[in-house]
Image (cartoon, rainbow, N blue to C red):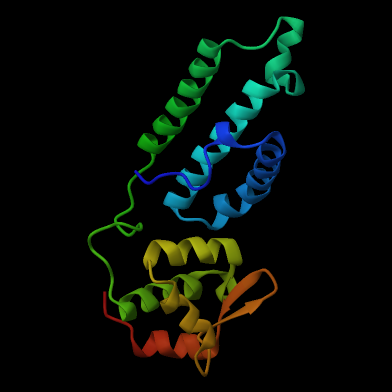
Length: 184
């Protein structure tokens, strides 16, 4: 397990704690959609650390600290809440089917195989189009090397192109796929 970046939340000034908390919440959407599993885990740990410290210092500023006027949650209640949150996250992960092509899998595809698999996913999509977020996730599943994917957009002629929020296979991409198809 890697260390969380930054100064421990307990050592931050009130101003810095609030600034980092606001920044963590602003970054959450990007990390959730585009970050690696490690980035998401690290971000979650840091955000929880910042939130718990903020709650410890300023319980009256949050709904968790008001408790309908009954006072601030006890240390045990806060620990219980964190354990339940962690337990739900672990259960959710255990319920997922592991993907043999996910990052960290031992059977990595070679670049040409990854390119063919990615282009095949585009070719099979309606009109050869995928939303950029879906395309990003598919690419991450098929190859951990983002340079392979970037090259598909940058080479001459490009095999994929961006059209607003969509990513589209080009005629050159279809031709490449046809010339590199492996019989099933």
